[in-house]
Image (tube, rainbow, N blue to C red; front, side, top):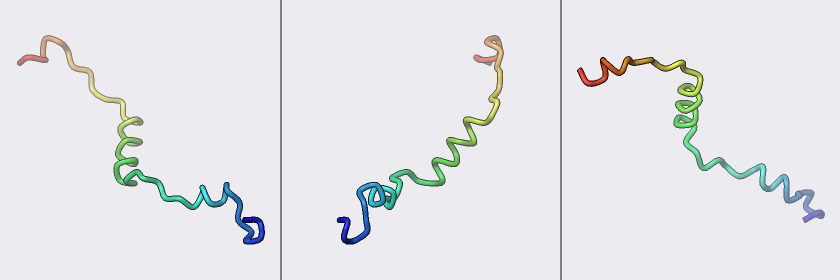
Length: 45
């Protein structure tokens, strides 16, 4: 491996993420949102 100039850490960095980028962005946006408060009286109307 050293003769090729590639180490194990470099090889691991090349691998692609198994997660869908659109899904990850959606989760990040939802984590930043404040959400809504609903009164329990209004829950079953």
